[in-house]
Amino acid sequence: MAVPLFATSLDRCKPRLNEKLAEVVAGGRFILGPEVEAFEAELAGYLGVAHCVGVGNGTDALAIALRALGVGPGDEVVCPSYTFYATVEAALDIGAKPVFCDIDPETFCVTAEAVRAVMGPRTRAIIAVHLFGNVAPVDELRALGVPVLEDAAQALGARLYGIPAGALGDAATFSFFPSKNLPGLGDGGAVVTDDDEVAKLARRLRSHGSDDKRTFVEVGYNSRLDELQAAALRVLLPELDGWNAARRAAAEAYERAGLGEHLALPRPGPGAEHVYHLYVARHERADELAAALGRRGIGARGYYRVPIHRQPATLHLAPSGDRALAQTELAARTGLALPMGPELGADAVDEVVEAVAACASGSI
Ligand SMILES: Cc1ncc(COP(=O)(O)O)c(C=O)c1O
Image (cartoon, rainbow, N blue to C red; front, top):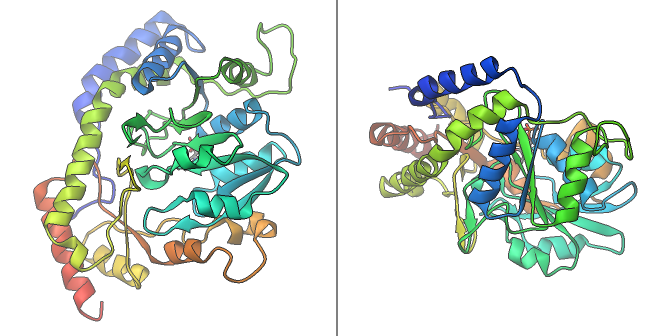
């Protein structure tokens, strides 16, 4: 039995999606209309925040949120190197300087201690990435005295001590890229915040730096969530909690089936309700194991094998000193994503665990 890495499907939702999209097409309004407005209200309500601003994608959401928080050229932004490239790209895009901190290799998220170790007088913000659906300790990060932006692209529906990821920091960003826990049918993103001024600036920045389409007070972006995407997301948002519960059930099933005898399993951070955007375990010979699993039809792969401080475009940001990002290097070398998704059934879980047991016990 083959088991894909992403065990997801929109099949059950397709009739409702088709109906809703046909309605939008018939209505003829495609940019910043009633669907975007309704989705923004619904997502803000789901998270319990005052404002949601729909934008073109999760990368623009980060750049817009950083600027709305007052981060500008020359400011330092502390963030992990073990993340998707967009986290750092957005900071560079607005002229800020990313300063990398290390992570906890068990949660794959930054810690307050690691952030504090690299903070300095020019630190203007922290980007807390909720990697793989886990939640970074934003409560502790806020005590460090600079604005915290949550990059919650991978963690919609996750919680920290009962509070939703996205409602923990000064602002947060989401991506609705089709593989995300709340998938769009293309690109989409959002900035959320409780701060009226940050929301106003984000709204202005997404529309060319204008509040009224006639007066341009900033150099902004053309980055709006469109009506078709918002309409699709409105159909899918009510499914999110059920999908995330199914992801958590699959993670529990992996554990019950003994996966932990062969690999170090992903661990929710203290107080975190993980949503397993990806199920990333760790193994000393992760790539060999991934190849052996692939030969048996099991989807498995490493994520962020080359962390950002070693990517060609961003090598100049690498911290000096060999061991400065030791835990980042460990996670990058040993992380191994295994099949996960709301559709991962009991048979598939057993198949994966059996295959891992067979591959990991021998010489691979
Ligand atoms: C952690 C993280 N940040 C930012 C992004 C960027 O989102 P998008 O692809 O919508 O631009 C992604 C998604 O790919 C992500 O995983």
